[in-house]
Amino acid sequence: MAMATSKLRDLVGSAPLKDASQAAMAVVDSVQGCRNNGIKLLGLTAAFLLIVEESGLSVSDLLAYTRNCINTAEGKRPEFKAVHRYITNDVLK
Image 1 (cartoon, helix red, strand yellow):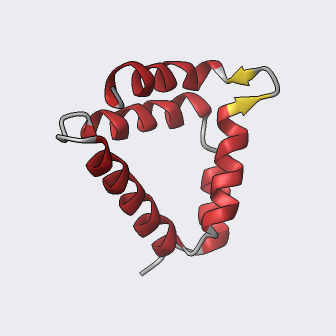
Image 2 (cartoon, rainbow, N blue to C red; image 1 turned 120 degrees about the horizontal axis):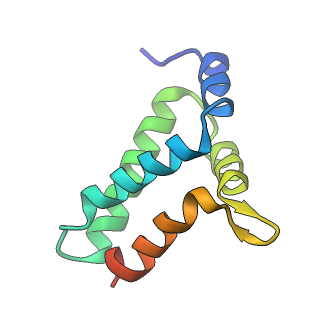
């Protein structure tokens, strides 16, 4: 059964960015061993869609919220810079 949408919105809205970036790093790291980038991207996207649909949240709303958490007007927030570098330099090479 899906978690109540309002409760999940409260959880997402109050999630510390440092913890969220560490979770992002763990998820990205879990696909690094896949043999090609298509498998990595499809696997990550499938997991994302499945969990967001089950939560009852809007995919587009969650993506917009997450984009704002990752970025500032000056670029990536410090919490997400290492994740971005890891993706760029290792995972999608």
